[in-house]
Length: 147
Image (cartoon, rainbow, N blue to C red; front, side, top):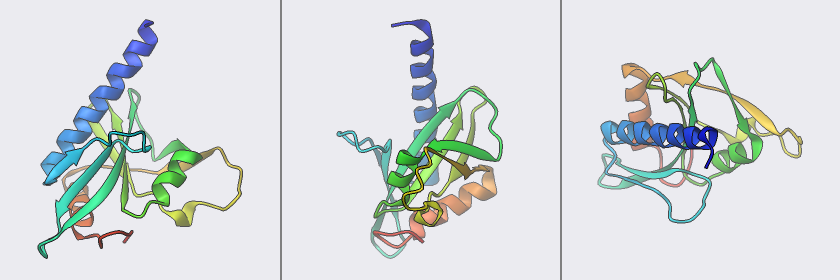
């Protein structure tokens, strides 16, 4: 394995660990990795306050560079998240600076048969206020759908 590939794998794993800690800190009752290649990194469950559990999908993207207002995502991955039957959270992790950003991919942003290979998605830095909004959305989202 060459050093560049090893570095990328380490950065990716660090980003996943930071994301997993973040999800646990939000109050997830479980954070699980799919055993098959589903195109998502985690399935998470949050108590919904009505005695049930809400499931969500989480995709983690790692970087070592400062992140701006947008993140470019392969349209195939974006469509997979946007067209899921559970809410899908995209976490972009600046693994070098321990900063997290998020977005909620939506099918409304996907234009059918557009042929676009990359979708620029607006991302929001996560601070304490945003963290609470994410928690509320994950716990309060209706089961099996987007809010």
